[in-house]
Image 1 (spheres, rainbow, N blue to C red):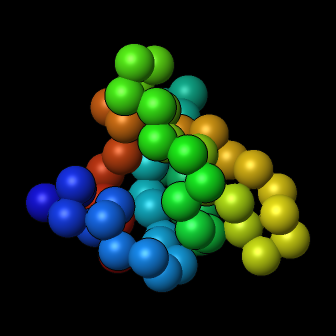
Image 2: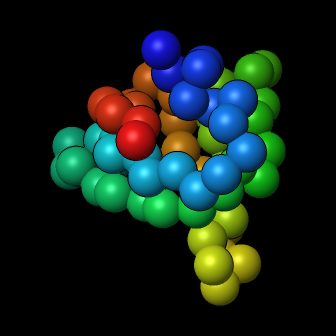
Image 3: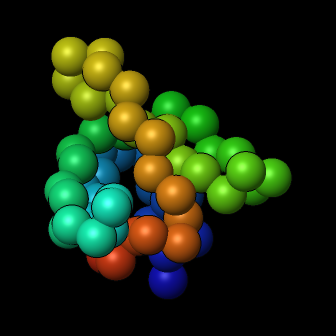
Length: 60
């Protein structure tokens, strides 16, 4: 299910856990690193967010 959402070429909103807190980030996929298990998003202001795949709760 997560992989299907990552294939889409549009803006995503991702809910994820970081340091025990639930965070939400919206942006387009910038990079997906399978070796380090991270997903990098770029928002509208070109700010870069790095998210661990294991911390992702929901993608919509």
